[in-house]
Length: 129
Image (cartoon, rainbow, N blue to C red; front, side, top):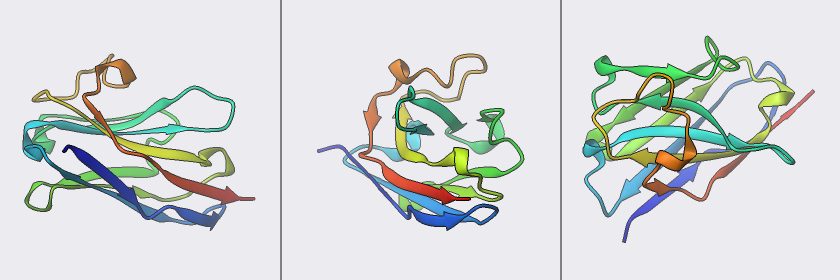
């Protein structure tokens, strides 16, 4: 069975840092572009970041997190990461990992949730003011 298991969420003060991870199993991890989405209460799910099969092909970030968040992947461990620095209360959300079977993240469309093949269950990130 395909699984994406996210972990590392928690409560952090404004300005703090947190690193969340997602481990994939049941599929060939390095065949997929991998992404993080988030969903805050009462809001739609939004794309946070995307990393291509090989990072040098392309990495994208939502404008709201650019310069603060860093996405990475370790294909040998079938694991993806999101390092979040300078956290703000508006970053509070459930963070979901997802995969798209594609070589690359596509500019202008990487953030479309409908493109995803697999989803993890999410991990809660809460930033207090």
